[in-house]
Each structure stands twice: as C-alpha cells, then as structure tokens.
Image (cartoon, rainbow, N blue to C red; front, top):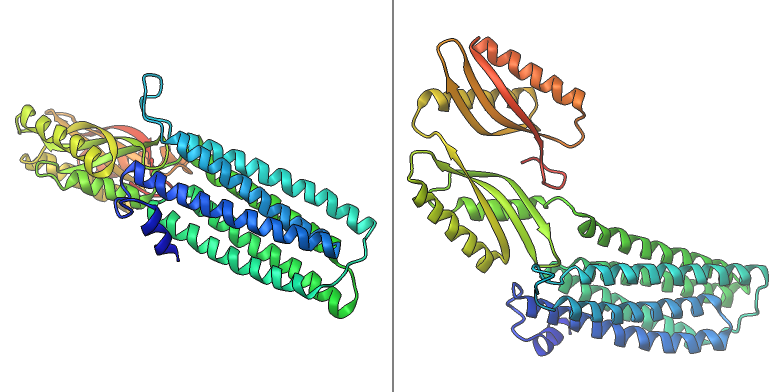
Length: 394
C-alpha cells in the first residue's frame, strides 16, 4: 500500500534530492494522516459516546488532534516550499519546523484537557455500557495506526524528515493508548470494574509526553545542532574526492529547513600549487556541492606543506603526541616557522565540548612538555577549538 500511494501520488518519487519531490512526499503523508485520523475520530467518538467511556472519548480526541496536526503540517510544508526572496535568501524551509512546533503545543494542550476530564471521571465515575462493536472499532483503530506509523517512518527515512519520523513515533504512541483503552473496555466486560477514568488519565499523560517529545525533536534544528557524523563523512568525503584536495576540517553546516543547508569548510591544498589552480578546484567543488548535494558551500583554502620533510616530520610528531595524550583530541592547520634558536609550531587543537578550561590547559601543557623533550627549540602556538560534529570527533 505504501509504495502504491508513493508511486501514484508523488511525481518523480525517486528524485528525493529535489525540494518539489520532498514536498510531494510531505503532502502525501499529511493527506493520509488527515484522512485516517478524521475517520478514527468519528468512529471512536461515536463509540465512546454510546458506551459512556472517557478513555475512548479521550482516544478519539487524540486522533482529532493528530488530524489537526496533519493539517497544520500540510500548510507548513506548502509554505516552506516558497522560494527564496530578497528578505529570505535561503528560502522558507524552517517554516516546516515552526508548524511542527505548533503541532506539538496543540498535542500537549489536548493531553492536558484529557487529563482534567479523566480526573473528573475518577472522582465521579459514569456507568459504562459494554458493546462488542466497541472492541472491533478499537482493534481496527490499532491496525490503522500501526500502518500509519509504518507509512510515515518509511517516508521519513526516505527523505530524512524529522517531522515525518516524529509523526511515526506519535502514531506508535497512539497504538499504546488505544491498546490501553481496549484493555479497560475488556477489563470492565469480564470483571465489572470501571477503570475507565484511570486509563483515560494514562492516555492523557501519553499524549502530553508525545507532544513534549515532538517539541524537543523540532527544537534541535531550530536552535542549531551539530552536524551528524554520517553527514559530516558524506560532505568531507565529497570535498576530499577532488584531485588537489589533501584533506579538510572545520565543517560547519547551517540548516535552513529539510534539504536546505549552507556549509563552510576548510580544504587543504598543497602550498606549492599555483593559487589560481587551487581556486579553480575550490570553485568547482562549490558548484558541484550545490548541484549534487543540494548544499550551498563556502570553502576556505588552507595551504599545506607537502615536500619539506622537516615540516612533515614535525607535523607527524605533533599528531602522534596528541594521539598518545588523548585520542579524542586532534590537530589541523599546522605550520612551522624555523629559526636557529627557536622553531615555532603553529596549529589548531580540537577538543571535545565537555572539556573545561582546566582540562584544556592540562592537555596543552603536557603536549608542549613532550614536544620540547623531542626538541627544546620547539615553541608551540596553539589555538584551541571545539568540534562542530554532534557528539563526535573531527
């Protein structure tokens, strides 16, 4: 069913790097979500009303909030498709995140309302009326939500959409809440004990938690997060695949919405190559990055010594010493200025974010001491930096 819907409602569905195709995926997911959740709301609201069940009614309004979320998401996706203009040169892609955040707040609000109603039902319980069709309706609801979760997860993984993956997780949460509601109905049928209010309370807490989780996931790209290790490797491998590029570092990626990114990176080039030749390579990489990766990239050239064995040996010595002191630390931008009585080693040292100033100074002091044991003329000028990789080492 998933592939059938994709092939028939998403034009050029295989070209996921195109913004228009990605938008079509989002529209398809939203329309499916609206249809399924409105259908479930109607049948569960009628069922809850007929058997006087607050937990079933709560579950129904949870589906209604999901339908509203899908509508807002659909509007957000269409607004995010708006092209760049003078005031927004990187487009309007972040609108998708903002609408998802609005959805999260709506979900939390619905959950709090259900919490209040459930507390009222616990204090003043209303007699349940068991009906066999209610069990059938709830089982159908579970099956539908399982498919919706699978559908959104499949599409979310395909186009790398946090919104669709969050929707999938929310659908799985709905499966849990509906299962709890089904349990309360069956429990009343076989024991005569009315646990409806308590189950409704649990359902409301799950709904609130789902809204909080969605908000947390969406806030990350809005606040600004480090580049994922896989994305870091993809971009650096792309840059370093060009002849004339010896290495790269200091990759920073700014997210302006799904598939809308700007990046800057330092690319190492041989210092004895004509600057115009290296510049032409850099220009080509920037053009290709936009075409092949969909990333607007700005590249800074770093000249690297490739022939002077004294400089190469000194750099290797620094790298090996740093590795021995702490494998989580790395160096780049190495230069050496030689004199008769002093040799200046100039480089950047990348340390993990959790290292405080005391820890950084400890590593720096130990590094200088060990290098001077190798050669007393070594004088280090070290710039300490932090990695821009999410939880990783550069």
